[in-house]
Length: 120
Image (cartoon, rainbow, N blue to C red; front, top):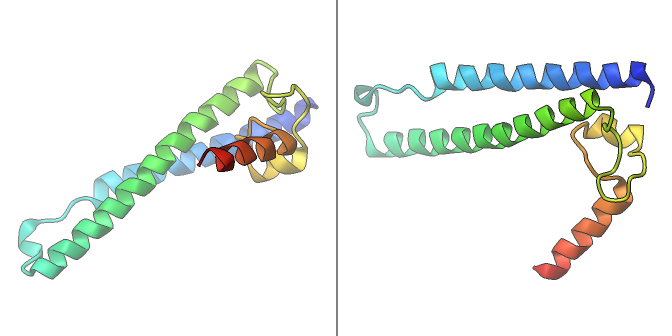
């Protein structure tokens, strides 16, 4: 893959990482803080707790994505970014534009999904 293309993906991944970190900080500072006296009603408390649980699930999803972003950045640094971990073929640029953390080409990903479907 050309250096210019790698730099583009690196910038995109770093931008995405910064957005996730910013959202996480905002969540920790604002969305999870609720004073008990603000919730006089059981239904209100239940609603806030449901919202809080949903927000925490989103942050957990982001945490997992951060790991994938860091792994992708490492692959850029060691020149293995864009190479399928299964077959060793190049992952298409269009796939990487949609999912820059992808580690499998489309054919290998489809095969993996077939196997998962058969197992369940």
